[in-house]
Image (tube, rainbow over all chains, first blue to last red; front, side, top):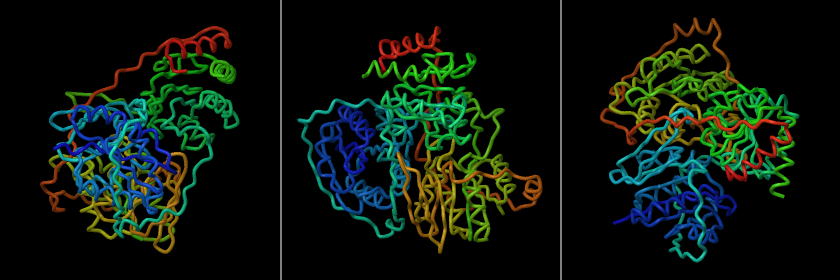
Length: 328
Length: 254
């Protein structure tokens, strides 16, 4: 009896995170192989309209838990609800995006279920013996571990931008099930007082398809607007190296590297970044890397697909203009 | 206030990773306190300065992890506990959380701090699992922490913003970069640390024998090294036009 591959769908204000759609897209392919139903589990408030969207990405069944206590993510309430659903339905696998929510939720849920968890995976394969195996970067991407567990459910969090999005099929129908939220009192001990979202129109760093990043060569905080202009022309996000963050030029939430964010965009443009091993660990899984640096010996050129040796203060604005011409 | 800090000894972030007989080779690698755990230690010392009490450092690791514990003691923590994980049959995040929970449940604690991630296995699991194993709440990836009347108000980093969470103590807090600026051990601190208590616990004494890892590593591999590609030369305006063309026509990313 096939018990299902579950995708825990993350949404905010009824907008689904891209990584959840990536997981549905890939989950569909695996479900086709295993014969399991692909189940999308959506927690939140006023989320009824999301059922059709997750169905169009391949879900056979949609479990909605629509409750005011789930309007915003909290560790306790989400763990409580998912733990009970998983114990009831016993799925073969539970997959979650490796986002701020996923990183907080998945370990707590795995511990409550008494199962293992493969975190921040960049690969997932069908495996006869263990149902699925996962590839995960360790040492900030300087090595990989292939991991598996023989217990059920197999649990993993998957890094954003790992799997391609399927073309949604809006004619697809899914079975829709509304479940009530059963939340244990002791899972309501932590209280969410406030959510402050940045007003930036730029995509979130770990989900961005294009990232324009600056390092020590930026020389000061006053110069970051030229990177922002390029990022905006490309519809991308702005990142930074540890050197730029430690110098206090840009907030640490923009840091890419082993002690910052790990990113895998389609295009990563490194401006004035020397390419310390610490930084490379956070971005070397990018599909295409461009380096702009005045030092021809900079290590970043050893990993860049395209490099321009030159003054970034001249090159970057020119590139912004060129991109505007191309896409505009 | 009784403060517990959970730390892990990791490879230095500048370390090159080498495989030997299919395993990660630690030969010649310098070992450090996981950088995120340093934020946790610093925060523990600041909480102690404000409220008094004792800071206990706990680490699951082999004999060399005592060096990391000594460094934490040199920074100002009061006592250390090493849980000797070489005595365990197999280790993963689940096992570490269970073992740490057993050890910590035998000591008084009002708050438990740890790093939000360890830079070696990068799994971000143990501290959160520990909270669950102790049946107390946790807040992950904290960049600001205030404590008043036995309630912690934590600002947590989320994707594209922050959250403010109020949590009754005892609770687990995981530290993100930005929480504070960790101090360096001073010379007198290093001298004093040598005399501080460092207890070694065998997991069997905690009553956790027979526990084994849920996740198994099938193999390790190294990434295919990236090759340096094309260096585009010429006048800046010309080089930029060529770059844009290559990104569009060759790499097909624009």
